Length: 136
Image (cartoon, rainbow, N blue to C red; front, side, top):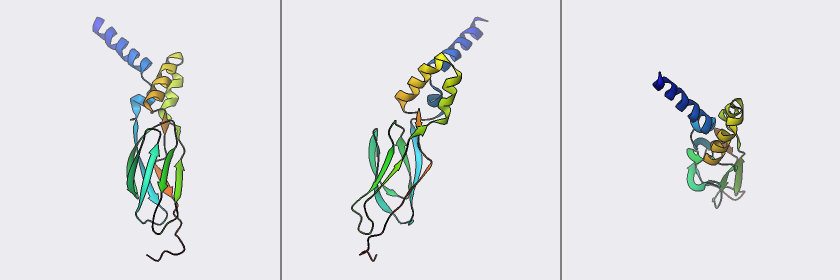
């Protein structure tokens, strides 16, 4: 009987201290970044947690953060410099923190610190504009 109560207590403690976003999603997110031309271009993908240089279209793994995700295409021979922003939004799992009442406050704090409080769109389109003098 004591083991059952201990297990119940441990489960309740985990649910109290951990946020639902942390329990049900990762601090990383895979986003599919594509272009309106379907041509491959070099891009910088960044937020407050870091930056990476990739060729898009691609599936890119990014760290979730409280800042928007920014995709920059620069210094391309045939396309104008372009900046595309994917606005951060609340992670759908965070809503469960509300159902835990006062204990949900600690869960929301945990989610915020880990980055799982936030989410990005699954698919992001970068609209490229061709330079007038490009013939390739």
